[in-house]
Length: 402
Image (cartoon, rainbow, N blue to C red; front, side, top):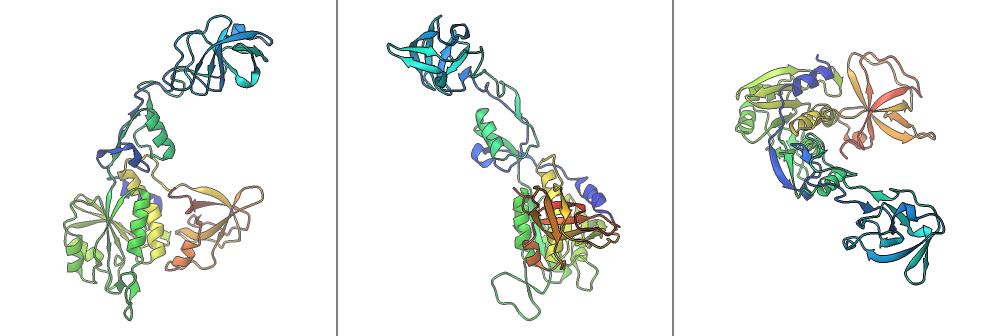
């Protein structure tokens, strides 16, 4: 059996980012920059006031000095003139600093007198409360590098850099094929021996959350020819996922069916729990991941393998699910040769640290336990028994797809 890290390396080795497309700024959220995005202007474009107050010359502003107010300059309405010795201009946050001024006297430190005069109540330091031109970024400077995942803060930055359209990678199209005579659609009647297909909608949601576009195929019966027919002709797909039927049982026919249309298996079986019967291969240019049929195992495999695959095809540089550290909320026995991912609740200790407590039942078909979990508690192969309070690694399910 391959280790998880070696399986990840082999899956990612031949994946390339999708091509670029231009999208409106408002639709760039949670996309990935396909090229470096450079600033089309200086920000701010000129020296502006960081506070409400008065544009002054610092040499005129010792405590007790008086100045004549010669004008006002609201934001967006620059003052047509300059600040001469003994004068000042009323400004507001964002107002352009007029020529001749080298500092801002904040309004709290100015006493307004009659006849458009003010008295300085505190000494002024040159340069104080002025946002200099280009202080945030300059014309031509890269503000968002290629490969950056664009979230709300990046959207604001790209907008400030004066872009209405954003070059991003096309969302990878991920086809999802469920196999099994027992599989039925959610919401319908369940025949004797049947089971609702929770994998397809769950995996489709996972694909969307990772940045891909899911394409759910019709459910295949336990028939190699039908599996081959449904999986054939996926010219628009960037990745094929199968759920169930990839093991070695008499009716596990995914490998045989896909073999009829050219599947070349790279590996099968991973030293992990849940998710041991994971299959990876290719049909021509199309990468294929065969997931276990048990839904918990399918989702854990999704987090470990589908998420980095979609991130790689989306052009991201951060591929793997992020890990955090926590203290164990209860003792755990020694682990065997497989990398274990225990469903766990997460709470906060009084000192702010995380506490991860594994659920007592870890069956890979128990979706309710998975839904109640905030993390996967990661146990390395051959890990010795651990006591409550020891440190452990976790993958935060409640933070993973923000």
